[in-house]
Length: 325
Image (cartoon, rainbow, N blue to C red; front, side):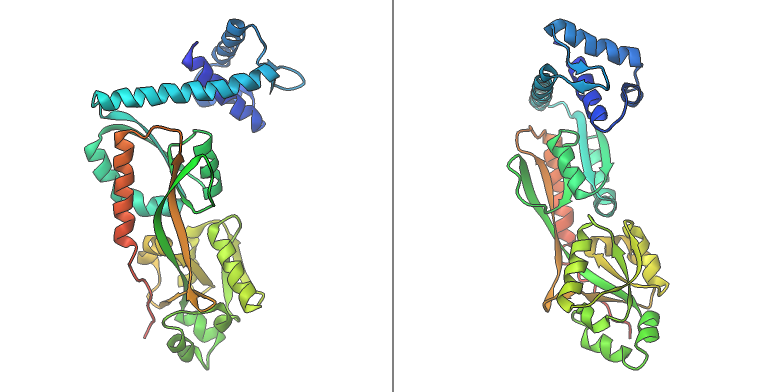
């Protein structure tokens, strides 16, 4: 049995499930369509079955469905054996596939990668940037090895390691506060210097993150608890816009500790940073590292995990709150 053929078979099925064609799969794998077709035909000839129905569109046959499960298991076992042998031989090379959202990646990778690459210069890195729910599916489907995600609940096939409890802040420029609360903006700042409820600033416009961003549900719970309908200045998926929107006094912005650390240098000097309160308690967004329970973790991946833990431990107690005098 050819491992390469099994790999191509798996990748073709992934693309077909997305509505893509064999041509697109071949392009992504940097091979010709004929080469890809030959690999599929080789498997079909070896086992004497059709793996795909060709019309009206390519879909797995019953035999193909069984082959797909076996192919995943075989490739995973082959990768596990290769990693174990490499560890035994002390060969410090391999592939690490890591996923994180843009903000989480921007926060940890510039710190972690120099130390990691100095220790393991021959390890190739593949980085994926997307949302937590997609990253979880990618780990389950063996598309990536490790992922930083929001805590999404317990899954029987995943190992979750807690990384950080990221505090949520509400950032509001003095200019915006004065515009909407000209008579009492100083009182608002004084009263809420240790934490703010959205009810205290309900007249302000807000930047709202679109679902399924983890901050979206936090925002909505805060507004619901305060029994207010927010004045939405902008809805967006792009967290990197928050510092500019806030600094230009266009809207009040919710920001996680990680996002704030990434954007602090571009945040306006007159921006107040209030700890967000929900039912008069600080709000946190928990983050974890996930990996597949059945997959072997090479020594270099263990080192990468250690570096991540050290980084997030160092920043976990940083207090970013500030009130402009």
